[in-house]
Amino acid sequence: MSDFKKITKFIVDFRNARNWGQFHNPKDLAIALSIEAAELNELFLWKNQGQLPSVNRERVSEELADILVYALFIAERYDFDIEDIIMSKMKKNAEKYTVEKSKNLATKYTEL
Image (tube, rainbow, N blue to C red; front, side):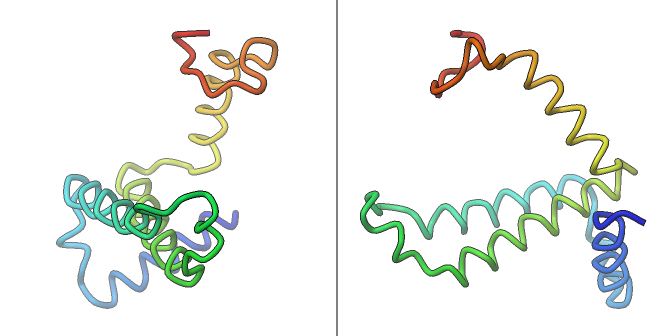
């Protein structure tokens, strides 16, 4: 069993023990993920480069965990294999962002 499957099983078991699955439809999971991402963003809001090292690492870790949990719940609802969807997306990204065209650039592929 892959690490992704083990983690997903753990969080699904946690959810199911509390009967929260009834609330975890794809729409609400996506909204929850977005809210958690906003909470992560808030930790960095108005910080300049010099202030970034002082951002509370524990809070970053907690918000990132929340984001990942909701992402795994969404993947579970759609029966996605995490490794497969990541590898598929990275293959597409490699085609859009070739090393030759994109190295050292933060430019969208449509502008390369």
